[in-house]
Image (cartoon, rainbow, N blue to C red; front, top):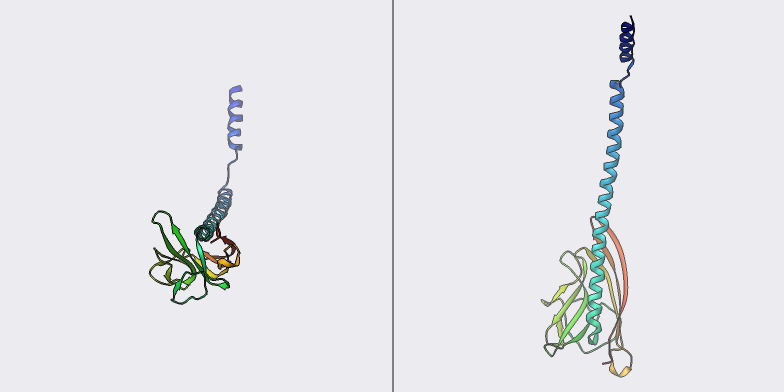
Length: 210
């Protein structure tokens, strides 16, 4: 008799065990899928935003590097000469001030070769119709041809330079003023279909009087 009662009780306990219904399983699965879709979408959006930010940062770093290169070369130069023409022209580096130039040129002495090279930086246009800063170098000569074969763009194709204003001061030895070039540079950095405007201003000052 005792064994029969125990068996019946154990059997009833098995029958009373509850399980998830098909509807509950479907609802739980649907909720899980929705949560995963939202999480994955947010992750992908975050990755795209990060890539765009890195691309813009890289483009702006190129602008900063180009300007530092101009500054570093200009500080060692002499005979600062204003450029106020964007056309193809031959420029003689003899010194010359200006208030609103589109570039400047100078002579840079090379202590290894014992000769002075002609350098120029100016605002030009690339084949993609974007503004860019071009550098011209003529080894052993203070005469340069702007937009010639010796000129190459130093800014990235992702950069569109809209303004490159140079203010040359103190190029005349007799004026007693330290030669300097104030540079104002404006434009946009284009990367991953995003545009970021930039404005940079710096001063190039000759290390010693001419």
